[in-house]
Image 1 (tube, one colour):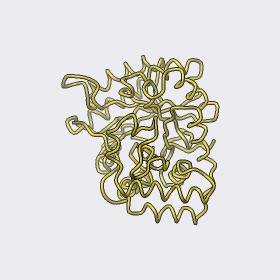
Image 2: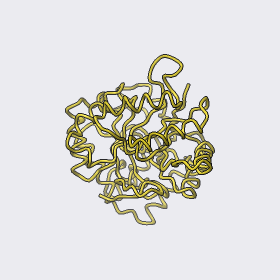
Image 3: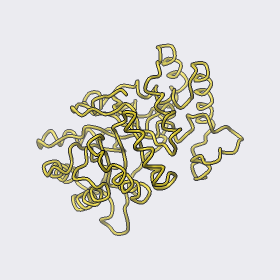
Image 4: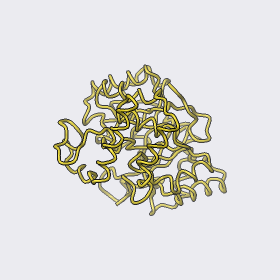
Length: 324
């Protein structure tokens, strides 16, 4: 396994991380535990979850499965998206974050979280309130590092500047939709992160499966796929997205690998990317994804992928989660 620094921090994270939003939904508890243990055994140390994944089941499953192995992982969770009814059941106010951290710690069966991430920018809460709450979490020992998610470049820079001015701990990372099918972060976010020493953690690195090549125009979605279990996902099936999936698959065939492995390997080569989180619902899927860590990509392959996907630097992000 390859390990990178998480942004400008001294924390080392595996180049391939494990996303767990399917734990407790598309993967039951037993399967999720097997996947988690196998990931750790293969050198994956970055485990990413959130308080809303599978209605909190993801955190609970991870907490039980990490018994005796907590020290082997960099455990990351998030808070800030809607958790329930009521005006304070969302956002990044001190009230909400303190409550959610305590609940996450109980489900995760741990005394601390290695990386605590604000799931999305909260326009209704002063940034200083959020950052001071996070600072208090760090000082209490319940949080080691802090990160952002779904922040626009200007929002992230405002938070970094405020942390510097107030002498507070800074965000060391930010999660964003980033893939061959969504290169919009390269316009502003990537340059910002390179300048400020913030690590990028891409989510939807395979564009929800489009970059695996399994979805074809005019064909039914494969059984068990995201689009088959969630028909609403087909809103992403634009002509250009499906065409890119086919083109990446064709190139992967020439290189002797799968489209998903090629797409993940490309993302790992991008500036500022610290770890690429990929979900898995089976052991086979996990083993397959691990092939991306050691896939050699020469300049010619990188240039061809850049050409195929260059137009995806423009337009709207593939995914963006904001408060309603």
